[in-house]
Length: 587
Image (cartoon, rainbow, N blue to C red; front, side):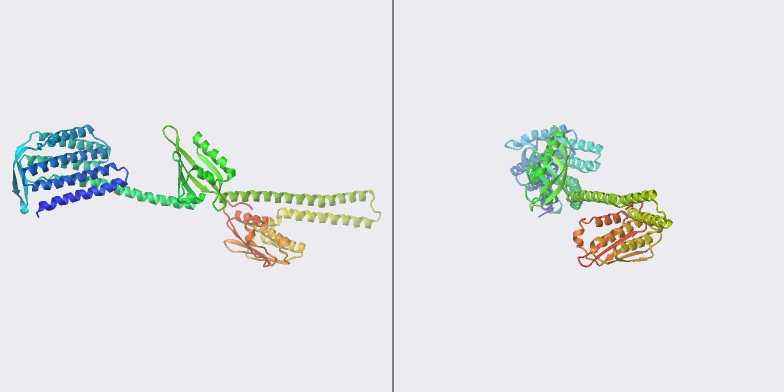
């Protein structure tokens, strides 16, 4: 075993390895042509390397000529595959040079199709063995050379010219590294291989053919540049995977389901989240009719009509509809889609997203219900005020007016009787004034603005306790005299509503109101030991009074907690910040 029998098989193995790597890459990536051409070229060069080694070990003229015939054919195929690679990979250059070079190679190879190969030698008279360093030897042919071999070399030269021209053009366009590495390496080593081979054939130098090493250098340069693309594609794929994961996470958080409808195949793709939104199985085939099948019967026709209109009118598809889930439940879905058309204007694809809007629809329904109840409560309050004004004040005033008129027509003769009647009239007027004051105070507590929250709440507790025979304990600690208007009115209304609930619903004979404050917030606690209620059932908003309290507290950026159990009383705790944001609403 010599260095010749070691190095050339190594070159062959390296070419085969590069070919296997890039044929695998080419079959898995797009575009694939460049990788597959490199793989084909590598296999061609591996074959050439084996033939080159066999040529050096040939010991008879007939065997030498037979191996030389196939070496010329494989070498020509390798040169043409390099031209095809540059043609595809660079996408530039004067392609007629490649076609001319390939044509010259094919013409020269016709000589090799003859019964006796006549491309390099017209005849071989002898085989001479030449010893070289390291104890190695190689075969050299002696005979008559064919002058037409210049056509073969001219074909190789034309291909080298094509590669050089394509590299120069590519350099001017921008990808200078690729032009220098791939184009420069191919041009240089093709020319080097041609020069070295022609010198060996002409007998100027006595060395083995080294074309395999030149070809390996070309393959390495091609592989390096293509590998850079693979690395870059891998990085882009990793970034794409990360982006998809982030998008999927965002879609899951927002209950979104991206989807694509291929109209020609009537096939819908969607993410697992999208399938879960509609209640579809993971492996189930989805199409337009399958989507319509899960739509609520009352919404199905409008959904189908909206799809047809968007496809015809070139408008985005938007629709909110109900679906029926496999377990019989219902869900509101909002679907948005954009139609994609081909060059002829025909709709071919729709891309969009589906969103679960059930909570929003429930909230809208709750808001509508609450609005109706608030309007009803407002009308009921107006009715109460009208009734109280008409049935109470109006009748009392009318009666007082009649009595005053009768008193004027027939006044008592005794002065004491006149005085008594006037005092009676005065008492009744004062009573109506006091009642009117209470009514006005219910509508808006002027005492709150004039005397502050503590005095107003204390007065309210005394009035409610006296009017309904309930003992109301009122405690206060460190509450400032002046509070933000929104906070003071909110707390007052919560106490007012809470005490009304105690009177109307709790059945308790005592209650407690506590007002405390620190440097950041005011805390109100209203409790009783009455019958209580099921707080879990009241959370949904069935109690208008609780809804009103929660909304007032929310508007001043506060927090409210209601705790109650049947038979154990009720405790309402409210915390309101002392520094309200400028956008905090007035309750």
